[in-house]
Image: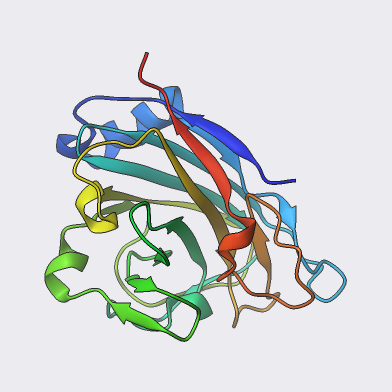
Length: 215
């Protein structure tokens, strides 16, 4: 079943410090647990991942808390292969036309973002657009390879303009993911379940629904 969540409005997120953003989202953000263990027979490892989501007049804030037994991040440049690292992802359907947008953030803050019609048909964001996504996290932006149980968090504030909106919508179709293709224990978790035979997050037919709370 496709999941649903109600996203709260929180003013001034965009001007918050890293600590302020984290505290605010922990206290007030909608909790979306990334616990759909897709393809568990082939990929049995199951890290603990929780996302917290909120919005402002101009942007959507998404924060992930991760606890896992191996954290690796070696992609230092934006639009690189971040999915091979410890990576958290937010995919959202284009609210104005066909296709969807994907925002993939590794544990050290390197970001891949694109507008897509499919997994292979993509227009990657320019440097200017990538830089407009505010990113925070607990780890420094340098290569890491931690091979024991550890925890980290990462957040991104995505301007609505990047997903073709001039104001907050009433609803969005979206999914959130955690992966790590080249970790010791590869895994492919999602918020809304992906019912395919093989791992493929580029599956908007399985996106859940986010409703924006205007009260």
